[in-house]
Length: 457
Image (cartoon, rainbow, N blue to C red; front, side):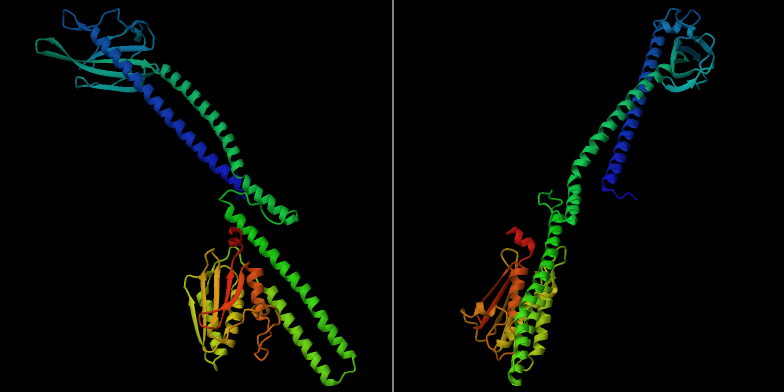
């Protein structure tokens, strides 16, 4: 099986071209042959009419023709043009001098006056002929008629020479045209497939590390392919960069608590103070590890992936929170359309909605509402609102930092909103806003955009 796309196109296009020109040649050849045959028929018919004009009856009412005929070839032996006349009984009445030493082939007599028969036949000596027979009713005396059949024949040599000359010219030109068209077709295919070869060359350069992504100036048919390949490359680079940054940040963040623990163990403080210091630093390390691992695990927009319906995932999160906060029994509602879609990783969406909805359940009095709808620029807008005390405007930026909590008495590590902020702003190129909602409590709005939407705007 041929693996080259260019080779397949060349073979297919060449096959179609050769078949088309071959059928064209056969059609033209058949048309010329029929036309030449019709010309022979008309020429022989004219010779018959000439013989009819020259024929006459002698004193014995016998049909005769003059020795000097208008067509000189009838008087020249083996001239290639022959004629004879037969009566209704098949008896030979007259024959042209050109038939010396040969006879016209058997031809069934035509019994109906005015009828014509035309056919290619061989003479008695094997010469190929075209023979035309025409029957007339000749009035010999008053109301007395006799049937005569005039037969005219012509050799096929002239016809065959014309046909061979035409075929040689026709197929010569067709072969020349085929060569020219195949060359032009090869150049067109090479020019048309140049973008594909360029994609392959750039992919090779990316593998060799000489470039980071594909060019953008490709034909519109290849734009979806190159755009999604670039999105995959950016996504892969972003993942690697996130993991590298997370490991670096984790190592840097753990240095201070480890140093504090090491110092506390070396000091001769009382056991209770050492225990409190160790507990604080371990909790700090735990929050740091959780935060960095959640940041690194974010997938971000996924190219060439099927969009996810938001409504089922929202319902899944709210059902889980209803069980967690069953003692408080908050009223959890979802205002998400069935056609609302998310272009990204399911785990990221669960992380964002889960953290926001969990915080809302912690602070709400009776009600939490989750909304999702497409934004004006194609982004996905997520809103989580509660009827709790709300978040003061001056505290909102602080709560987005890692480890900050509005109320230390409420359970949690204080990293949920920070993780959501990183996912929304750094992974999905969006924006996270905290304001007061219509229910009187906090309204957290997240706008998520994919890489494709980011480039469009």
